[in-house]
Figure 1 (cartoon, rainbow, N blue to C red):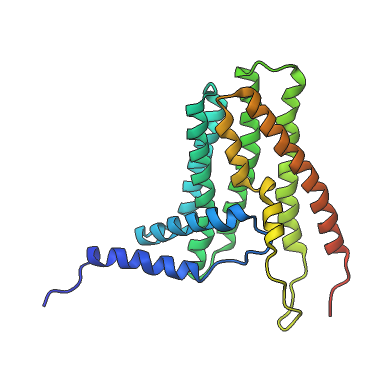
Figure 2 (figure 1 turned 135 degrees about the vertical axis):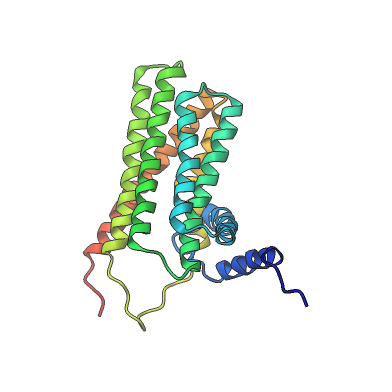
Length: 249
């Protein structure tokens, strides 16, 4: 009786990995609707495919970097157009989903490593910094700006985006961990998940779909910058209060 070949088991392995990934998701608390219903599910598919292909989390992180920085380079080097906007959006969204996939794959394999977490955060920080730098370069090379002051917009957006990323990361590291048996956390708020959409990276990627209309792109980019500024203030107050509160017994 012939045995089952590796080729026969590939689809089952993919489906099994996908089911295990669905059962091993992080909490949805503090996550926007886009990340919860679009990015994480897409990342699950990529993670299951990577698992079947025998890839590790760090390799998926590097794949995320390749897609993300391909989009970044295109913004900086290619004259804006509707076609470019679609290509940039696709590259950034795939890169973002792969960024979710690396962590999901690590959990599927039994947990990540400090080196893997370091690599993931370094790539994320580089991506945020480089993307706004690419917008600045595009403005300088291709845009007919109403005034040179518009060149300060990407620099301001870059500063605010990095502060949100770093502040949230540092707060999570410094926040006291709740001990077992402590007060159970409240379920995720749908209203909060909706309110977080303007500062979700996946939503930010969508503004590049407007690259074919420079005025609309600048308007959308400016609106998102204003949202990021407001959220930075709100987040900073919240994080500082959390870290200033006395530890709970």
